[in-house]
Amino acid sequence: MTELITVIPVHNGERFLPATLDCIAAQTQRPDRVVVFDNGSTDRTAEVVANFPGLHCELRRNGENIGGVGNLNRCLSLSSETRFLHLLMADDLVKPEFYAKLRSAMTTMKGRGLGYSFNENISQTGEVIGRHQQRPTGPARRVPLNDFLVPQAELSTVLLPGVVLKTDFQPPACLFRDFPQVADALFLAEWATLTGEVVEVAEFLCQYRLHPFNASSRNMYDLQHFVVDEWRVTQMVSGWMKGPRLARAVRRLRFRCLHAARIQVKIDMMQLLRPSYVADIRRKRLELVGVPATALGWTAVRVRDAMRRLSGRPSRAAELISNAHLSA
Image (cartoon, rainbow, N blue to C red; front, side, top):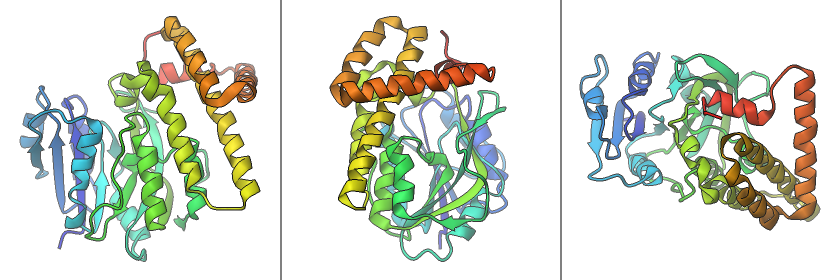
């Protein structure tokens, strides 16, 4: 019986894929199967998979590039063949005890659900350059649904490579929707809402690689993906949260202001990267969140950046550009 399948969606991944396969081979509890879904690569991806030593990988090649979201949904087609399914991006890593600790924390979970670990950010060359979560580490715990959904709605999402899905030999609870920039945030929120089981392993067991070739960097110059889709996902996830009417209204207002602040950081980034793009983002921000939230978001970012300067740190926009090695 197959307990765990690791599935890797990839398109032209020869640059980082060997390190990703290495991290699977180094697991204290290896998956039963490793399946690579090659989405029309034109580089040496297939050769890397076929010739990788010490780890048997199944290679499945799409006849053509079906898009990142389409390939992720192909990965989910394996849900009914295993108890646990891990979608590992071809440029990210997991530490040697990732599978052992995630599966151990999820053993008492009834039916489908998900478990996740914390994530470190790494550079192109693998150096740790930051940590995604700011919460302290501790023992594994069950997470109430609303507590899990709030960061998803804020787009401070749990990162997909740090998540193991408990599929329990059933079809997927949901599929990825066509939001290329934030499909993972919405997918994980919807999966958790439909299954009701979430476990947090509060250790930094996953490493998310920041580089100018990843999907987030490619989507920066598409206004729909970069700004509009994020707002739509925030609205959808907030609608799944439970609670009194007043609490839901306050939460929606908070999300509106947070989104305005996120867009301000994007504006600051584009002032450095592509100034001609800034006016379009500003117009879209007013259309989405309105004047009051725009003013509050601008103020929040300016205060935070002032505090960062006092502590000798760059602005948030400059930090994001530096971490992803984008050229200003």
